[in-house]
Length: 496
Image (cartoon, rainbow, N blue to C red):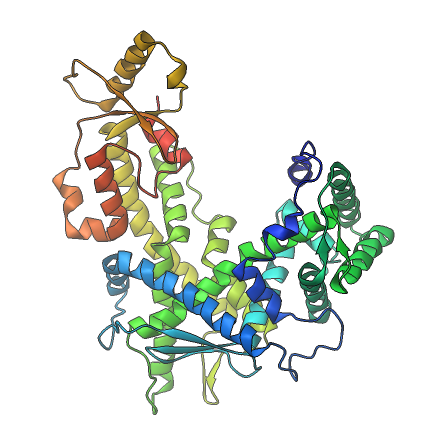
């Protein structure tokens, strides 16, 4: 099983390495999530209790505001591209875009959902965020990957039978409390073996279709309860807790960014403050437009760049294009936010008593269609750039150990690499230049340039304004520098 190989990869680590739980417990995002689930016992009632201290609420507001500002920075870089995408589907701002800073106000109560009060103030409530955490866990354990099944076995789930909400929340609170309160011990060689054996036992029970082995499962729970009360966290249990939190983060972070992007859409499109007396159709249109803005923005952020790059590279290499990969959908966050998070937070699609928004299935279908529309356009632009990069590259890259070569072999390698530049006349001297940042290696400069058609405003907007600036810089400096240039792209376009 592939996931077991992952867990075993560190079996040869040195004795006395740091406990993995220490790698995440001081991180700002973990502290934020942990503060939402403060107790390990059954007495916590989020519908009745305010559970976070004033300092934790202030820190939560600061954390959410910082994440919101990340989205605003992306928008600044890709504003023309995002607005062009929206114009194509007839979504336009109804007021001038505000330049004022926006603050996220976090409230530890059970009434606040998420709402843009004004261009400078957005309220997000604990109920929504706890729902996103639980929804992210629920989505993670119901995934098809083996890692999802291992997470399900940790949380006490069984194949085809989802954990009840109360059980899911209780297990989440137990893991958070154990990580927060426990005393981490150094990780030893024996911990790697114990962790492997625990995972294997839990997974065997899960895959056989029964409940996890009671002895193994109860022992893990007993140790987590002890750690939540201030006991020790062994290296093995630290590895288990690290696995759970990393999987949770990979699902929660995109869901949160989708919500923040939606609220940013209300700000940018001039929706706030919301006027009184709007018709139901007007309210519904504003929510649709904010959703469209969120997907347009994410299409020019890491989720969209990854998906469009993968699809464009597949076309260039003559491979099958994977247009609807689960991992691509996960990165946008809207499925886990809408299908799981909102529902587990007990939130409905009502706008007011007389008006409701799209139901879950309809809203996800709407977002799927928007995503395909925006990504198809960007994929076409990236494909055009990739084909030009391959035939007229700004450089040719090699990962060879150049420093170990003799001078004669270096000259020969440079000459052979230059032949791939696609130019008729070769200079007398070919120089290898060392790449000091990722992707590490060496390049030979090619005297190629971007054609004028790639400089047209319409093309730059389709590609992504910031992305185009990075590509243009690659041609100017004859060095890798674009965020598009991951290992697969470099290997396909710039290596022999």
